[in-house]
Amino acid sequence: MSEPSEIPGPLVTITYCTGCNWLLRAGWMAQELLSTFGQDLGGVTLVPGYGGIYEIRVDGTLIWERKRDGGFPEPKEIKRRLRDVIAPGRDLGHNDSVPG
Image (cartoon, rainbow, N blue to C red; front, top):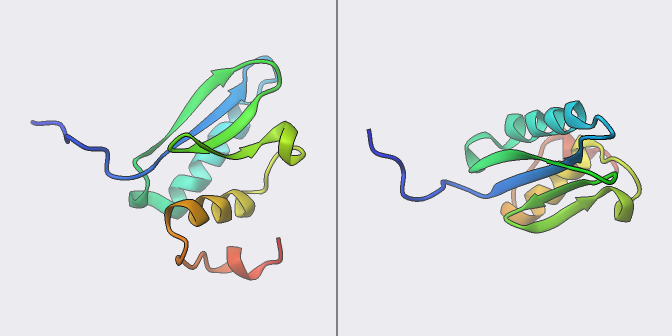
């Protein structure tokens, strides 16, 4: 079987602090993004880090940083930010109707 020569969509990376035990939080966010965007993403990668890091990037562009953005994001906020980068016209259903 041949491997695809190109990744089918944007890549999301979630870098989390291992010392802070944020793996479950990062995994849950990955699940939320994959459930919403499915085949529109090339993948979600969890990257272990340290020093209180919790960052979410899409194709290298930072869309959430725990220290800069004030804590941990709600899934609806990350879904909006991701949508704004990869598919600005896409409707997120109830995630768009609830005030942010």
